[in-house]
Length: 318
Image 1 (cartoon, rainbow, N blue to C red):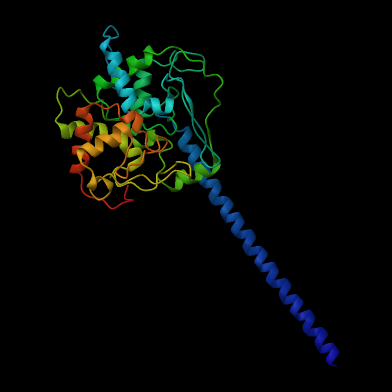
Image 2: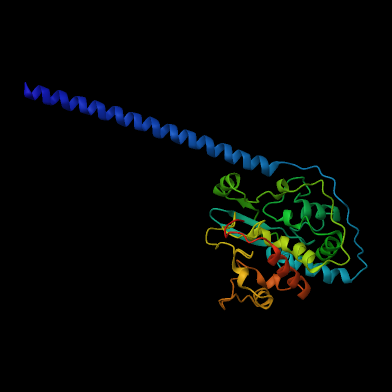
């Protein structure tokens, strides 16, 4: 009798174990299906944003190509606005991010050389791409900070385009095409990564008129927009959306962070020589002081005054 009871109990336990395993399998399978559906939706949203087209009217910019002084001014704008940081000193384009998560992001060849867009883009097309983030085909540029360049006034925009037009042709047919990493697409939808900047811009706002003479504070505010890509709209620093994982957090450059201990002389030393208060040289890959150091004394002084005027932010409050 005990043998039959033992056998019965064993069979019952086995059946219960099988039922439990079956339900675990159903739950795991359901979770996988739900997760797959969520991933598909997120991916679909990213593709929809990528393929969205914009039909916008732009403010034309008058460019006097006979004015040779425009080229030097344009070189200055292209440098301090970090155009050369991505597109290269020759504006011939290059790979600026290659990462398993982010993907392969290519800065476009802006010259008239093979593979460049210089011959195909009119001046109006360049204005549309630079300050509206919209390509000639009507789709958004990818990961270019056009939302930061939207404030560039008509005089600086004219000089910048004249400078782009002046560059020697560069052959960039060897460059691969931009490929957005699958994980990066999902991260984009779930965060504030500026992958398709045309979505961030109010396209109804016309190009700002030149200001004959800005106060130091106004000049600082004007050039400071180039800082927001890393340090954030509030300049509070923190984790930079969309950069490879090995990148450090951006510093808090308000009085709530590192800038509280800087004098103007310290600030100049950091921006011109890359040396922080600890006496270390900042890594140009993460803090491109080598291009920002091209700012004039007036621009750097104004930038320092503007950053000092901001409310103290907690570090990480981009």
